[in-house]
Image (cartoon, rainbow, N blue to C red; front, side, top):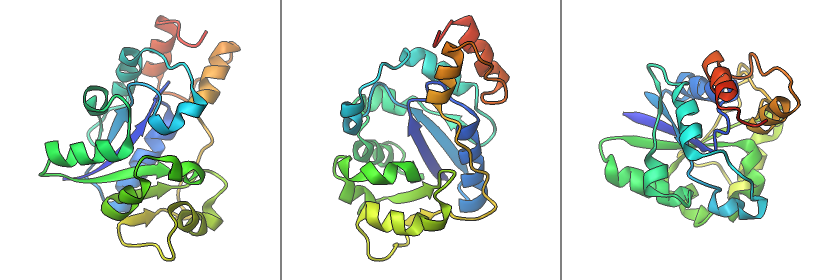
Length: 204
């Protein structure tokens, strides 16, 4: 199968994750999207240290987003707790040789992509899908070339800049801040995730 991977903290998972997954399935033609919650802060994000919710809570909430083609995997939690992207990609290929993997990255990550361990190997050796944030569609290809240090975009790098894409600025940070302020998060997360957050008094 062709499987696209969306990694992240998922603290909490939200409709933005679901919109990315569904549209990657529609526009790239992958069979499934796997959400890969990280164990802790990614190695290249150490300068942005943040306190994540317990991994068990983040995994449980993310599993509430599963459907027939969107799956949740604890692979990185068990096999790569440092959340080093290239290591995860290599381990996935080793453990699941029958699948073809794609790595989804948001266009907002392009500016810091060169902080990733062995980032050149990621660009040269693996299939990448770049999904735009809400305001970067018109200059996306140029940003991809700059972020990946490319003269032209190779076949293994898929840049989604279809004007029909549904883009959103919903983020986990925004949701946590709204919960902390006592504001509603309805429609920003599935009802099951909203109930989980309330039941476990997260982000208050």
